[in-house]
Image 1 (spheres, one colour):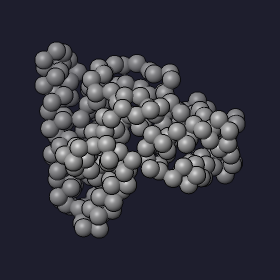
Image 2 (image 1 turned 180 degrees about the vertical axis):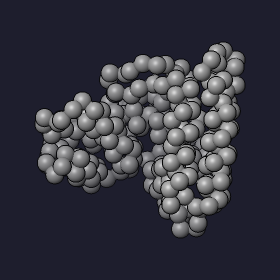
Image 3 (image 1 turned 120 degrees about the vertical axis):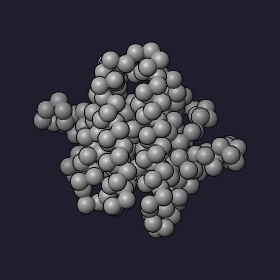
Image 4 (image 1 turned 60 degrees about the vertical axis):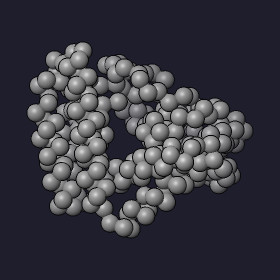
Length: 245
């Protein structure tokens, strides 16, 4: 179980930093809202990612007029939690949280509740190639990681013409290729990391899955642990998700 008072202090501190030092106290209904996130098992990093999503959208609207309150970030935090649960395989029913979506079709539209924009398959591939190319040029990527980044980027680039006109079974085949390439990328990266980073990823995976462990079968927990480790490593290197979700 996540310690709720400490959890709320962490959220409050993070919101203060995002608001350029302006302190917004988490009290009353906002406190109940945030403690519900803790009871639901929303990892702090996932809550921070949801808050980031709201601020990114807020900045796109122009100069800020007032500090952001945590209540405004609720939908984005729950969306980020949905994404995390789907990625690591936590499908348990959770009071106060929505069931993670597993088969929602991609659309080119805007979700006004959370501000998430769904992109076309071709645009997704274009963005992933751009990100992989940038990462390959960075000093952070080790030599063996650069090689796999280049290979995956080349294969994705070759798929772009088909992605623009793919429909039906052809589109599903392309999506399957993206999933395979994503696994290729993560397998190569996981094999290349050192013991220290691996231990760090494992510790965070165990901590984030702690609230769910007693309710998960050993096999399910083992799979979720590996997926959570991969997610940590993906975030560490800034790797994009090649799979089309």
